[in-house]
Image 1 (cartoon, rainbow, N blue to C red):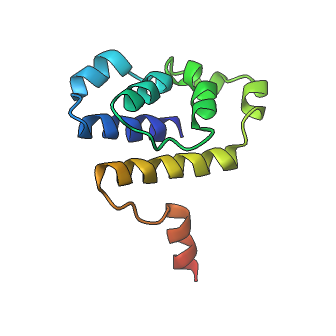
Image 2: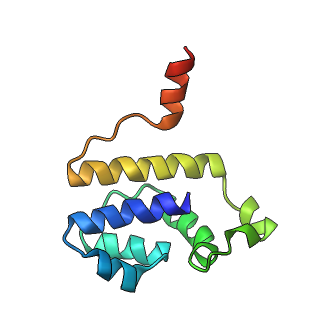
Length: 114
C-alpha cells in the first residue's frame, strides 16, 4: 500500500516535470513529503483520509521497518478503507495527468470469476 502511494505521487511529480533524481534525493520514501510535494506542484485530488494513512505508514515505510509496526498503529487504520483511498489516489493521479485508469484489480478478478 505504501509503495502504491509513493509511486502514484511520484508519477504526478514526474508528469509535472520534477526529475526522478530530485524525487530520489528530496522525497525518497517519505510519503508525507511526496504528498506535500505533489500538492505544491498543483495536485489537488488527494482523497480524504489519505494523509492519515500516509502518516500512519510513513515512519515505518521510510525506514524499511513496516514489519515492525506496533499493533496499536496497525489497529488505528481501517485497511479496507485505506485500500479504497489508495485506489482513489491512483485514479485521481491518472485523471490529473490525462491517463484513464481502468477498473481495479479486484473488479477484474470479480469479472473473471463470473
